[in-house]
Image (cartoon, rainbow, N blue to C red; front, side, top):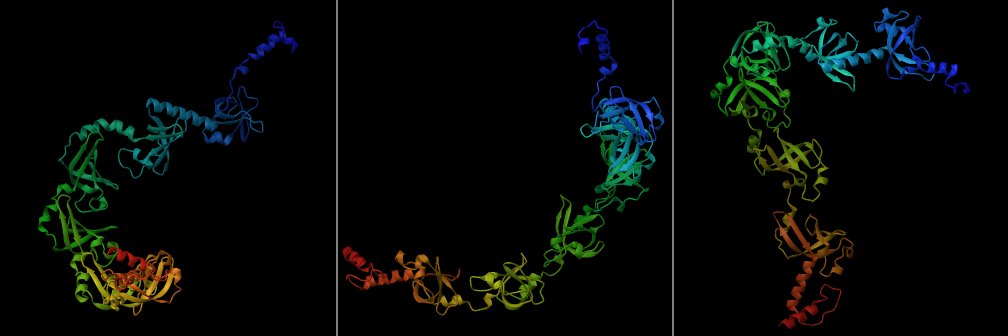
Length: 575
C-alpha cells in the first residue's frame, strides 16, 4: 500500500477512479425492488444481471410464465424483482418477480385510494360473501362484497366474470395488505341524479299501481316500478297475518298495487306496503269478547307457542303455558299442527299494542277443580309413586293426571325424613292424606305420616313442669337423646339442662339405657315441639324442699341439694 501514499502517483489516481465508478455508487439493500437484465435463458431458469450483486440471481421460468411474462423472456429484457437476500447460506442471491409485482401493485392501489380514483379490474372467481377481483395493471387481488356487486339484488353475476370494468376502492388495510372494492358505487354514481328525480316524484301515502315483483330477500320483497325504480316491501308490511317469507303473499313476475310509506332521499330508497292497501282486520276486534270461546286456526308454531288466526289477518298468540293444566313442559310443537282448527278462550285484548292472547286449556275442565270435588281435604286414599327427587315424592291418585306433592317431612313423624324417603321407589303404592289443594296455583300437597296415629298425642294429657320418666338412648357432646316411656319419639336434653351444678352437667355421666326423671320445660302442640330438662326438675324439687323443711344443715355436697342449707339460712334471715 506504500505506492498509494503519494497523490500524484499514477497508481493512486487509477485507484481513485475505480472507487468513483458507477459500481461503487450503487446502493444495494434487502427488501428493495431492483431491475434485473436477462443474461441467460435455459429450459427451467432465467439468469439475471443486476448491478452491484456479486453473482447472477436466478428465476424460475414457470413463475414468470404464470405472471404473463412469457413473451418477455428474451436476452436483454429487463424484469423488476424484489431482492430478498443478498446472500443465503449457500452463497446465492435470492430474488422474486411475483413479490415485486405485488408490492408495486399495492403501492399503486394506495395511490389510487388516497386520490379517490377508480381502478380497472375483472372478477376472476366467486368466494364466500362476494367475489375476488384482479387488478388489471398489477395483478393484485381485491375483495368485492356481495352487497357491492350491483345496486340491484343479483342472484347470479356470472355474466360479469372476467369482464374488465371499473371498481371503487372503499377500504384499504395497509397493515394486512387487504383491499376492498365496490362496483355498486361506480354504477350508483351514474344513476344517482336520475334516481333522485324519480324518487322525488313520490310522497308518503301515494299509491303505486302495477309494481312488479322482482326478487325476494329474508327481510322483504323488491318490486320494480315501470322497470326504472326498485322499491322495498318489508316482511312486516306484506300482510296483517304473521308470515315467515314473502313468497306466502307475493309471486315473482306478478303485479301488485302498493302504498308508499317511506321516502328516503339520502339513501335513495322508497318503502311500500301491501297490507295497508286493504282494511285493517284488527278493526273487527269489536266482534270478539274476552272469556268467550272461539274457533281459531293454527298458522305458525314457535318454541314458545303458536300463532293462530281468528279470521284472515287477525292473529292471536297461544302461549305454551296455556296449552295444558297438568303438563309441566307443554309444547305447541308436540300438541298442535299448522292448519289445525282448535277451540280457545280469549284471555286478553290489548288494542294499544294490537295483541290478542288466547288459552286452549280454559276450554277444558280444570282437573284440579274436579280433583278437589272427588278428593276433599283430609281424604285418605291410595296412590302410586310416579317420580321422586332429593327431597320429595310425586304421587298419582286414582285416574287423575295430577302429580301430588309429598315432602319427605310428611313421610314420617321422626326427624329424619330424608332417610325415610330412601325406602320408596317409582311404582310403589302408598297411602296418603290430602293436606292442601291450591286450584289457582295448580298444586296438591299430600302426606303419608298423617294416615298414621300421631305419637305426639302422648303429650296431650301432659303439662309444663310435669315430671316424666325417660330412657337414655344415646349421648354426645351436645347432650342426651332420650325417649319417654310409652312414646315412639326421641327428644334431646341439651347439655345445659342436665344439672344445676355446671360441674355435673356432663353427658359422659351417663352410659346409656338408664331410666331417669326429667321435667317438661315447654310444650307446643302446633309446632310439635317439646323441651325436656333434668335441671328444671332439680330446681322444682329444691323449691319444694325449701317450702317444706327447716334450717337444718344438709349433707351431700355433690348432690343437687348441696346448697339447700345455705338457701334455708338466707330464707330465715329474710324473715
